Image (cartoon, rainbow, N blue to C red; front, top):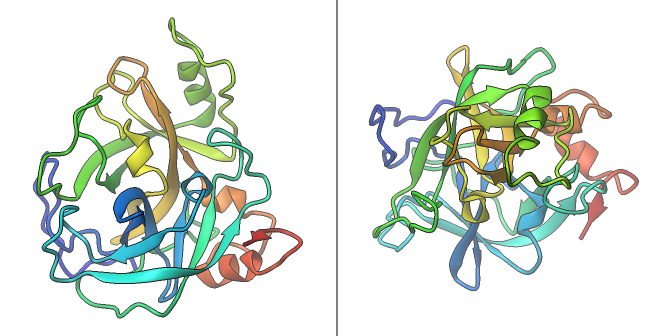
Amino acid sequence: CGVPVISSRIVGGMDSVDGEWPWQVSILYRGSHSCGGSLISNQWILSAAHCFASKYDIYLGGYWETGGNTHLQSFNVEKLILDPQYVSVTSKGDIALVKLSSPVTFTDYVQPICLPSASVTFPSGMECWVTGWGDIAFAVSLPNPKTLQEVKIRLIDYKECDQLYNIGPSVDTAVNIQKEMICAGYKEGGKASCQVGRLGGGPVVCKVNGAWIQAGIVSFAQGCHSPQGAQSASNRSTECSHKPPNAAANLLNAADDPLTYKVL
């Protein structure tokens, strides 16, 4: 997991390379991209709970949103598992596990991401990446053919992030950044996945010892094109700390526990 066959990058660019992020998932509602996600095994997807208000289809191997993908694999949803703490997009537990209708076929363009072991940490200031098909600026849609985008972001400690969310004229007092969350962005603004509506559920990934590991799930954002902007992402390893640590198999075993997770 976490080691793409195709790894060249457009340094400083926004378009990714086809196959560079082979765990990237596109979640479709009525045929259109709605949210992101990540492949964590041959039949399980990790995403955000707020993405699943209705029935969705799952695409893997996608590069252009508008079509013409030669590596695409499509699936229906067999089982949806939500964290019971989830209430709204800014609450705890904005996490969903999705079982696909059939196993994926691993290729150069479809590979799983690694989940963190108990020994892996993601310190404040660490540079990581967010990928998806979000807008390129506020209210500016990604132009055709809507190529999978990538952006480098820096992790921010949850206490500092909570302070950033509570300064300025447009403070949302309903947002309380908690230790179960991580934040990512830049204090000076301008680099963050602020168009979370279509990036929500997508992975925040960090490279550790040569392999990509998922640090979080894109959940919500505020003011990311102005100073003090920060994006929040659910920290899965903290959310699941009440279960055996942190490998994909343990996470899936925890998700099958009906006393812990809401199974739909």
